Every structure is written in structure tokens, then in C-alpha cells.
Image 1 (cartoon, helix red, strand yellow):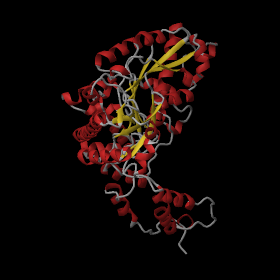
Image 2 (cartoon, one colour; image 1 turned 120 degrees about the horizontal axis):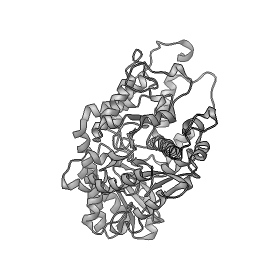
Image 3 (tube, rainbow, N blue to C red; image 1 turned 90 degrees about the horizontal axis):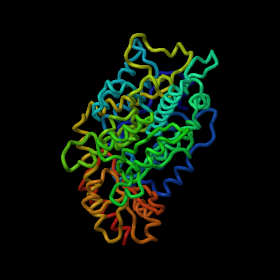
Image 4 (cartoon, rainbow, N blue to C red; image 1 turned 30 degrees about the vertical axis):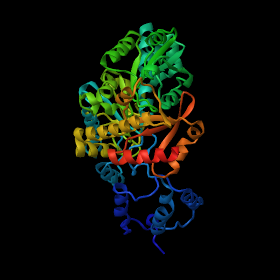
Length: 517
């Protein structure tokens, strides 16, 4: 009988022959359906062990169980370039290598202790490299943190925004003071939102946005802002001229001036269904910034994947995309996602803010001396500026992939992704059985505005109702089903580093022609 590693101690030899097989699968996946066949799903699901045994079945039998039973029930979302759902990236070879190192050494990147590990140094360096990638000045963005993804980054952003705008409101009213003297101070992190709202003379807090991601509403619920207080300030006429996220500036200022409410503004830099941008260039962003300053609003940018427009050059080919991500350097905070276009493993997001003091007010651990960092160090302790106290070393794959491929590598990847999306857009625009959605006066305008997402529907209502399942049922590619203007639609989201423009365009045409017959 195989020895039990937990009972018998360390130093026991195990068969690691599977490691090479896994590496080969990741880089050169087998030719199979993007999704597991129904029979494989049923078999894998029925094989899941649901009762804990006393003795355990041992390493070898468990390895066989994983390879023979569990893996056949997993999809190929990260390893197949033709998985176009959820803006799911793959994993670059350099990131995959680093993630194996992460699992082996399993650092808890929570406290910056210079005599213990360089993990926090790598964490800090990776954040600096990301700022370089996106053209953000390092010294202007002192607060940076890795998160579990864009949702967690939006949580950090809105939590900081909540702290900032209510502090401003309380200070404006002259309510800041010493709690011991009977006056409430202006810190939500210290005394809670109800107390500070009362001190500031406010009824509540609202989030203003144009077509925000669902995670913004989720975060508003978590933070006590309320999902009902996430309000649309989108123009009613924007889609007719290809700007479905266009600001209604008259409504925007009216909401900012609303009596009894402080505001956080969340800009959608890459909307999830269309890939479109809420602003059209630096001048419009400055206009938003000026209004936020006038009314003491926090300006947050949800740039989960739109941020990568900033790696493009200034050629006319990508002018609209480049302009869509212009100006985010004027924001108070920015959300980014690593497991999308950066192509590092789940789960990885990142967040930047200009206001390190605000982050510490929100996230610091009280009265925990053992969590203090080494004195005199410029690198902050991560657990005092973000949600998690225990943190996976998710910075290492980010560091590794940026060191390996540099800005030029990522620029080339994003260019391929955009060019494929634009070929699909142009082809669908001319197709007799499909309609492109998201606005645009002409084919040329549609193509120029296309980033890495193509939103479309079938003209035939019956086909459109089952279009996503029909496409995915071919096993050759995967798309996300969604809704646009209340009607079913499909979304092709191109985000894998393995994209090959002509090869993938040929496959997409074949599949969409096949299901439309």
C-alpha cells in the first residue's frame, strides 16, 4: 500500500512524469472540442468523490483520478485560442513557468520584511513595470496592489472613493474632530459610514457611470452604497452615432450637484459587451475631471481590459482605441485585470491610486504589531493597502511575463487581437444573415471603433434565440451569449496570446456560416 505523505513525513518520492505532459498541453493543446462533450461532463461529474475516507487513496491513485476523471471535464478556455468567452486570456509560457514557481515556494505576500524574502520586492517591481507598460508615471501613483481580479480592484477603488468623498464632505461641513470630545471624525474606515454621513450632513452616496460592468453594482452592494444608487448618465442618442457609452454631461452635472449625496464616478474604459470606451480623448476626460473636482467626486476608471489600448502606437490604424484610453492618467484610481489581456493565470487583477493615505485609512489592520513591515522601507506592506491579509504570490507571473516579452511583445499581441476582431466585424457587416450591434454609421466607422470584442446577432429570430448554443455546439469555438437592447446577442471576445489572425478568421467564418445555413 502506498505510504501516506501526511502521516509518514517529508522526503517521500513521487512520480512527477505528469509535469511534462501538463506543460505540453498548455502550450500545444490537443485537437479537441473547446468544451467537453456532454458524455465527458457526465462521467467526470459522476466521478467526483463526495465522501471523505479515513485512510485516503494515496498520491498515485489521486493523480490517476485527476488525469482520468477530472481533466476530461474541464474546458480549454485558457489553452485554446478559439475560446472567445468572458474576455478570458490564456497564460504565456513565461507566466506559466512563474506560476509553477509560485506553487512550489508558496510565498504569503502580506508583510514587507526585508530579512525574510524578496517576494514583496518583486510584488512592488511588478506593479512598477505595469505602470511603465501603461504609460503611468510611477511617482504619481503611489498606491498599487494586486487583487483577485477586476471585481476586487473595483472594490478597492470604490472603497477608497467612499472614504475620500465622505471625508471631503465632512471636512467641508467642519465636522471633523476628536471622537473623545464627542465629535465624530471623518474616517469611514474608523467609525463607519452612518456616523460619517451624519457628520457630513448627507443622506447617502451614489456611483455615476455609463454602462458599468455588473461588478460595480456588486461592489456598491458590498460597501453599503447600494446597487440602486449606481446610476446611468449615458446619453440617449450616443448609440445612433456609434457612441453607446457617451456621457450626458447635462445629466452628469445635475447628479453631481444633487443635494444630500456625495458621488463616485466610474468610467467604463472598455465596456464588456461592445469593447467601446466612455470617453473619446483627452479633452473629454479633462471635462469629466473638472466636474469631479468641482463637486469633490472621486474619479475611478474600470479599465479591466480597455487599459491595454495604451500599449498601442500612435498610428492612424488604432487612433480611436488609443483615444478611448487617453486621459485615464487624470483619474483618482484605475482597475486593471491580469487574467484578461495580460495573459497571466487566474486569479489576478491590479489596482492603482493616487491616494496612498486614503488606502491605508480604509484597509489598515488595527493593533497588530506582528504585521508591521521593516522600518524605514519605501515598499508598503500589502495587507495594509488592500483587501487580503493572506495573498498568493500572483505578482511573479506578472513580473515574469513583462520581463520576458516587454512592451513591444504586448503591443504586437494586442494588434493581432484587434485586427482579428476587425476582420470579423467587416465580414459580419456584409453577411446576409447577421447584424453587427453597438452603433456605427458605416462599415468603416464600425471597424475603426472595434477593439477586441465583436457584438452581433442573427437576423432570423429563431436562430438568434439559440445562436450562442449553436455556435458552441460545433465544438470549434466558444462565444458568450448576452443581451443587447433587451434582445439575445453573441459576443466574440478575443484575448488569448495565441491568436493567429488569418487562421482564426478562417475558422470563425466557417463556424458562423455553418450555423446560419
